Image (tube, rainbow, N blue to C red; front, side, top):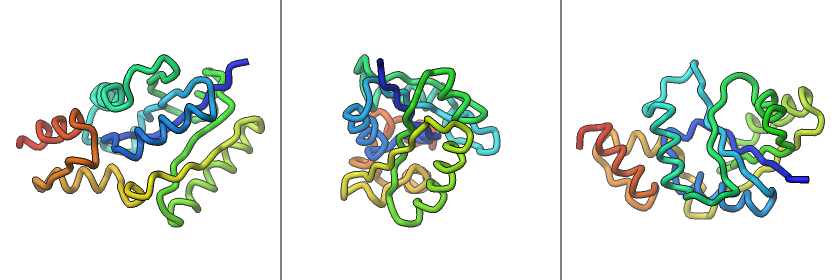
Amino acid sequence: MTRIALYPGSFDPPTRGHSDLVTRSLALADQVIVAVARNSAKQPLFTLEERMEMLRAVCGDDPRVRYESFDGLLVDFARREGATLIVRGLRAVSDFEYEFQMAMMNRHLMADLETVFLVPPEDATWLSSSLVREVARHGGDVTGLVHPAVAEALRRKFGR
């Protein structure tokens, strides 16, 4: 049986921390679906299509990794895809409370769906998409924080 993991997020934009988690998730599952949320409550900087394109550039074309979008409940998407594992990143203790609540609700809704928390590498524990967006918006250097394709997309988005 193929073990399928979901790595959900908005990825607006994808960072080095995101790509690290995708790579390390492959040790836990036979296939990882990077699940890009179409969250209508958020106003993303990048379109869904742009985020999917950046993720492909960042994470590569490993046949064990798929890129899909979803809206609605993650557990419904997990059922459709046959996933039994959710991978989430924890950068700091402050992330834990929210992620714990989500994991418990997902378990309530789908008892056989497990959540695994991974921590990023030490040099990316402070890194977030919102921080990258803010630095790029003001013309700061995001080299080393994101893949070159993402840095270029940020430059284009902010007209630099």
